[in-house]
Picture (cartoon, rainbow, N blue to C red):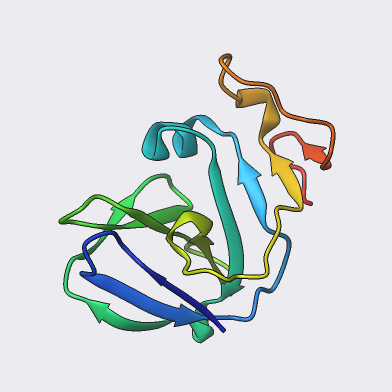
Length: 130
């Protein structure tokens, strides 16, 4: 079981187990929202249990999905596609120990010019599945 919360505690949740690979997304949207690349792990939408959601807000980030964040402290918490059975949990909001490790880098063509991606994990361009 994974547990997470925002910085101020206005949003807290349990979820899990992961249903796929934990990824670092380097797309323009994720970088602009988080300030760097976005590390996330997918879980079943049905497994997500919001224990506290007083300050949870959803932002329509694209034609295919929304991003969940805390309206008080600004913590980025979720990415949820309109289609599909998964929600991605932002790994920085998870309480340790998680037992998780990144498994891949995605949207690497849009990565920032101020950092390099190591060769330790597989990399995928936009539209490729990991």
